[in-house]
Length: 125
Image 1 (cartoon, rainbow, N blue to C red):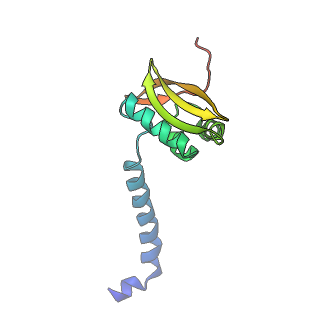
Image 2: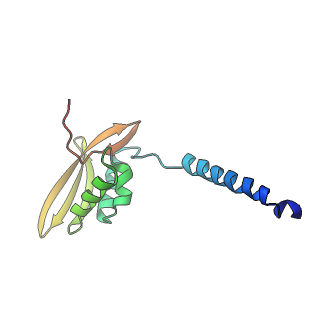
Image 3: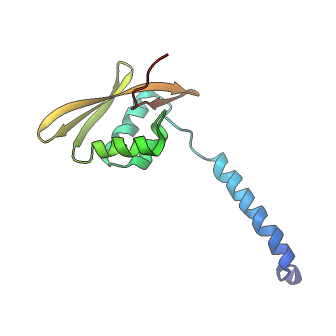
């Protein structure tokens, strides 16, 4: 056994195989993008915007990725997010900015059975 552990060929084979197994396990347990229900989506979006955390917001987006998530989170940097709820096909985030109350509507879409938001206006064709 000690001879095998001292053999460089063993390690040249074991380390890449271990790395491949780790990658497969990480991918298998990777969380699905979006949320299981619109109410859960509203809760997760509100939490991400309240914390100004674009990393939590990014997997909830239908389009845009990191740039759109960062832009959306930055929009709420100086605002106080009060609550969010699913209403009329959109996540409605209520917030206060400079003493003024406002609402931000994020349309909800379904992708692969999961609910995601689409903060980017796209033309329908």
